[in-house]
Length: 112
Ligand code: HEC
Image (tube, rainbow, N blue to C red; front, side, top):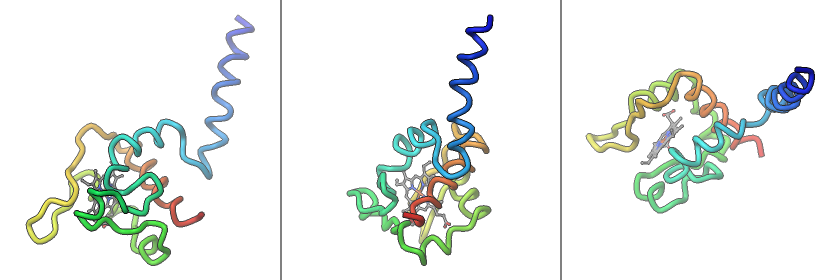
């Protein structure tokens, strides 16, 4: 029993500590799987798909400034269309918490 408790603490502690400033491994994996094909692992959007769909450079402070939580949330939840063209599809699999974590991750791109 005692061993078990130690294990839980050892696993939970680093995760809790990293939440404030860094993206959790889970969110990072999610981002890489679902978002990086267009937005790039570094947020610059200079992937083949990103260029084609005109993804913005999220390391640019001006782009970061335009990144607002509620709008970003709506785009990730509902998708994005400009001039009738689908830029981003909605993802029904994502939970609200995951979306919030993903937005927080995208905000990190401006801080490096
Ligand atoms: C098929 C390509 C594609 C994928 C995949 C994709 N996006 Fe996008 N996304 C775009 C494009 C294009 C835009 C519009 C230009 C921009 O803001 O970069 C955009 C815009 C956004 C915006 C800005 C919304 C705003 O107007 O403030 C956010 C936030 C965002 N995406 C997050 C994500 C997240 C999180 C994922 C993964 C769950 C994701 N995107 C997956 C292409 C994509």
